[in-house]
Amino acid sequence: MTFYYGSGSPFAWKVWMTLEHKQLRYEWKRLQFDAKELKSEAFLSINPRGKVPALVDEEVTVYESNAIVEYLEERYPERSVLGAGNAHRARCRRIAAEADHYLYPLQRELYVQTLFRPADKGRDEAAIAKAHESILHELAHWQSSLAADPYFGGEEPLLPDYAAFPILRGLARVDEREPAHGLGERTPPWLRAYLARMEALEITQKTWPPHWKA
Image (cartoon, rainbow, N blue to C red):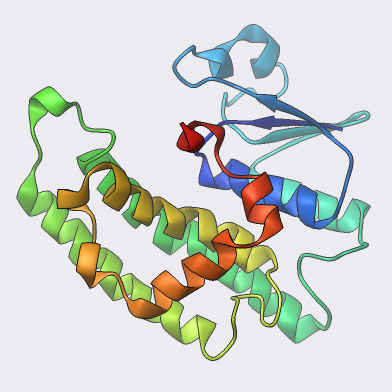
């Protein structure tokens, strides 16, 4: 099994955590965004859209993070990332979908205005403030989904955590790289606590984005 990854991609991080959760054996290949390796002929033959993650398992090639996770869940049902029971598994899928469709676009917009914006173009403070308000509004939904559980998956981290944590941790990345443009003291206490719990896990440390360690 070969896993194609890009450092910092929350969707690739989701799959990486799934692979580790299931304790599967795989070869890990990191593709460099700046080197345009995702657009190479070799990789386009695996994923013609030129995006990570992608997975090759014997004769099966899968791309799109959710499709990869579902493939792994069906092909290797041991150590499920969805838990037991139809209701719980549906809840896990729902929260993971919310991370992709509602949370990620807001994180992405903040990145576009901060970490991805060329320094010589300055920062659009009004756009950043708008992004902050949208994120804080969305985080209220996530607090209710967490409820009294330590993880979105319940008593243990599962797929909804592997989908949401990389995106939520990306918000903290803005505070680290551009403190003046992160959420700062407006970061909800529950989110700080959740991030700390997730970061303490061995699976998180093992899959930490390599370029974040620099």
